[in-house]
Image (tube, rainbow, N blue to C red; front, side, top):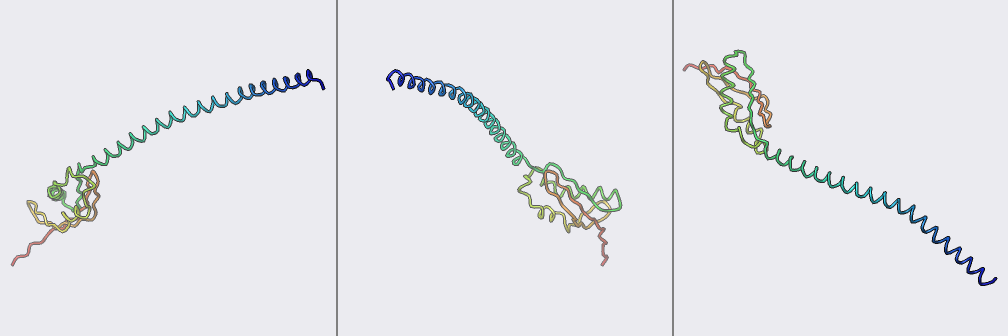
Length: 154
């Protein structure tokens, strides 16, 4: 083989390698561009989601701190509607100091015990109270049975 032929083959091989590398660079480059664009999109999305999570955590913290009793509903089981209203009023008066307190700091059993077993006096009669159930949240709901107390004459 002569040297000219070897140079031609070597230059053809070298030229083929260069053309192949350039083609590979074009193909791989476009894949890299797409991958880089996808990474950029995902980083932006991650940043947005992180901000949303922070905002939701702050909002949840505010809601936890802001959970205070703002309403008290009393449901009395008694037949006379007028007396029922007076009993409800008396029970609300017993629980008036609970309004404005944080819900987390209240023990439902203690709230129940404030009313359970109490005797309230209305204009006409005395009533013994028995609590059937209590729900303690921003709105306290209490179900009370009222029973007329018979006065014993000595």
